[in-house]
Length: 435
Image (cartoon, rainbow, N blue to C red):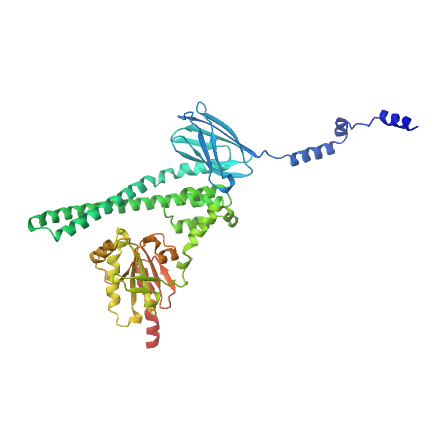
């Protein structure tokens, strides 16, 4: 009997489901099934990168990931100016495509996208295939006329020439005291000629700086609206990297203004987080903060600190003998110091304190003498490594910090007129007493 039951079970056929008949009879079921399939299907976790460039030889390209989302370096083979590669990518990543000659082209890899690089080297290259790449290359095109690279190079060269001229003039001035009368006139003429050349170069440098500042204003007028339109986009992070971090010391005001246009959650990006910390690095210099204490020697090795000027308003001026711009400000400060010295009541007088970023004692002392500086001058010859400089996050000179009689910061990087307006508050308590 058992054998009969087994044979019967083996001969029993399981009815199969006729999907075609089912779908034809129940169209709604068919629609739901189609939608379910679409929802459960996933876009491939890859991105295809291909391109064809005129002027590209068959040396391999390098693809460099510039953030934590694509922290790797890939080699892309090239044949007859063409390349094609499929790369693993889970989301969106910013990369740089490096040509054999060292040229770098930014591009975004996006999951499921086909990125295409076309054009001719070295000047006409475009990247398409996603809205991110389209938007950044459109922005690069409109900002190209305002690039400051060439001006930055000229200013750097001028700075080196001016430094060399200063060294030559200083050495000739040192020879004047030892020279015989017949050589003295010759040395004077040479020094005068060099000074004239230095003045010409300084004027040229100032003119170029003005041109550069104008270009930067034009660039910002295009960049800031772009970030404002794309506050949560990776393209805005690229803009920050490309336009604001290529300088040795980025302008904190510019960076802060750009960061304010981003969505708060963009701080998750490593670059945005670093820039945010960079901007707030000089929290000490925020108004109503107390100036940190310091201890620095003057030219006679007498130590000065914040409490040396307790009960007095104090203007700290940061400068260096090698920085012509900061030395140009000495003329205005000499006038201000003369005005303040006429005030008999010490508590009603503004004290000025010079803090130099010099590394060479002789150059510092020479500059003090040449500029006829009569207020206290301090320097520990550690330049940018001076503890106070690092503590307040100073990035550029000339700079100044104004502190009231309680040691509270009431202004920084003020103009002469702004300083005069601020120190009017010194006399207010005295005027109240008289009333």
